[in-house]
Image (cartoon, rainbow, N blue to C red; front, side):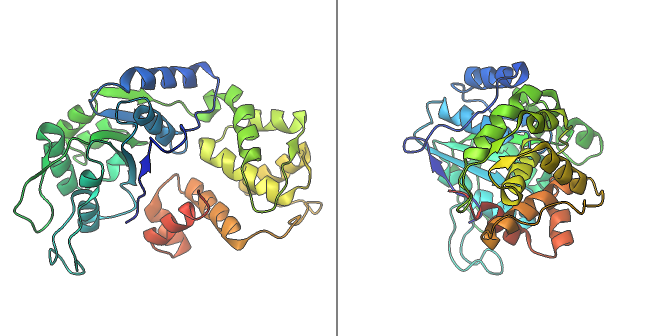
Length: 321
């Protein structure tokens, strides 16, 4: 299974880091919408923190003690995605060697977070619409109708209204999902959140790397950057800086790193890796960087790296606790 459930009764509250007015408004909207049972659609660019808001919606709701199950709809295609969502019976398709309940069953009484909802196939869109309308679905290869009361939270970085005009997204499904909406602004509009985010990322474990400090000049450079990859890109940059730098991150280190990200030649004075790090951590950082370059498009990442979507997902989850 390409997802993992978190149980709010035994887990910590999600980290919602930020103090900007726009981020605080998004959190206030989440707190207001959390007790409701209606679907929520979260919009915003890739990497802005849509899953954090989804986790808050679950954490502040009466479902907090139940499963919160996230699924990136862009990671699987066609039949595999339908099987992951709705389940299947043994023999429903080639490779279906046993019964599989699916995520709507696993998320019953809890929350199912469908990230990148714009990547759903037409067949999945039709089945999801039925779940939203009457709470019913049928596993692949089965004649039995099942019911679920999982709350659906969806997210996308795409313009769904434009996709509707192009015939790529169902208008009726959009209306069902778009009952409650939270839009998350890009990091470029939330510069005052950057120092808090940087401090949080510096405190995260990274092999045997000791916690580093950052100079005021370096912080100013980070705050002035436009961050097209948003919080995900900032996290990636901080992790790379921690690998390259010793005790202190300086403005020259920021210059060197951002110049390399922009395709400019690396300075001769740029330091090599300051310490030996586990390969898995460097692999994850590189895959995240490629994901940002491809603007969150998993298919492009898969083609660029010549690896499967499943492998990408495994690498991205490999160092998470």
